[in-house]
Length: 398
Image 1 (cartoon, rainbow, N blue to C red):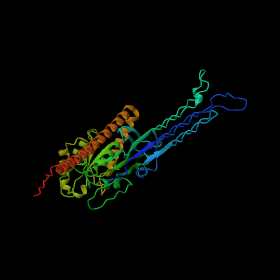
Image 2 (image 1 turned 30 degrees about the horizontal axis):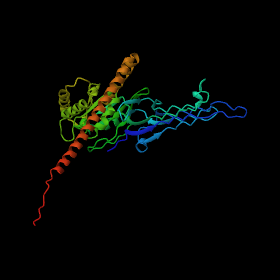
Image 3 (image 1 turned 120 degrees about the vertical axis):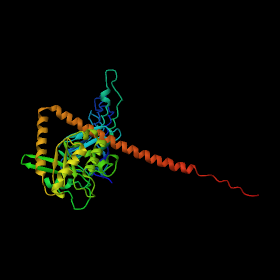
Image 4 (image 1 turned 180 degrees about the horizontal axis):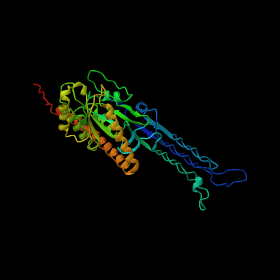
C-alpha cells in the first residue's frame, strides 16, 4: 500500500549557454577584434514551502523536472539570457533527502522557506574573454557547464506539538474529536486509522496547540508489521507524546500488557524518541466499574514502572480531557518560554529531532536490506533445487 507522504523525483538544473566566437566586422574597421559574448547561466531548481498543500500527491505522477537552460552568447559582446529558475512547491514540514546518498539536504519547516536543490550550470565564455596583448584574435571559447542532476526523496511529516501513540482502537481518534474540531472516523467496531489527522486544540483566544492522531501501532511495528513503520517517523516532529492506553481492551486482553507492547516497539524503533517526554493517558474509564478503576490503572503504572505524569480520561464522555489539555498547554508554554530565554535549548531540540530521524531512516534501511536478503535467499534455494535434478541417461538396445 502506498501513502502520499513520500515521493521520489528527479530534478535537472539548466545547462549554461555556450560562449560565442565572433569578430567585429564593420565598414572602415577591418580589424575590430573579438566581440563574442558569454552565454547565460542555467536555471537552478528550488523548493519552497507554501500553505494550502498537505500532501505530496503532485509528485506521485510527475517525477521529472527540468529548469531552463541558458542561451548562447552572441556578437557585439552580447551575453546570452540566463535560464529561468524552477521553483517547486511543497507542503510545510517536508524533509528533502538525496535519494542516492541518503543525506539530508534540508528541512522545510517554516512557511515561505526555500531550499536550492540543484545548481544551474555556469555559463560558457566568449572569445572576448581570451584576448590579450599576445593573443589579439583568439578563437577560443568555452561551453556552458551541465546543470546539476539529482534524485530527491521527499518525506512529509506532520507538524504537531503533541503526538498520540497507542494500539489500534485505543481511542486516539475519539480523543482528538473530543478536544478539537478534527473529525477522524470513529465507530463502535474495531478498525484502525489509515492516515494521520491533525487537530487544533484551542483553550483560549491566544492559547492553542496542535495534536496529531497517528495511525495505531501493532506488535512488530518496528520490524515492519502493519502500518507503524510508515508512520512512527511522524512522531519525530512532536514535542510531547501521549501514550493512550485502552483500559477496556476489545478482546479482553490485559491493558498493562498492551501498554508494554507500545513501549517496547518505541524503544526498538528509536531509543532517542523513547527517552523523550511522554505522558501516560489511561482511556475509556467510562467502560469500567467504579470499584475497579484504581486497581486496573495502578496495574498499568506498575508494569511499565512509569515515572512520568499519568492522566485518567474518557474520550467518549470528555471526562478528564479538559484537565489534560490544560496541563499540555502549560507544558508547551513552559518549553517555549525556556527556549526564548536560552537559545541552546532550541539547538538541542533540533539535534534531538535530527537524531530521531536518523534512527528512523536507519531502521527502515535495515528492514529493506533484510527483505532483499530474504528474496535473494529464496532465489538461491530455487536455483539449487534446479541443479539437484538428476540427469537420466537413455540407452537404446541394438
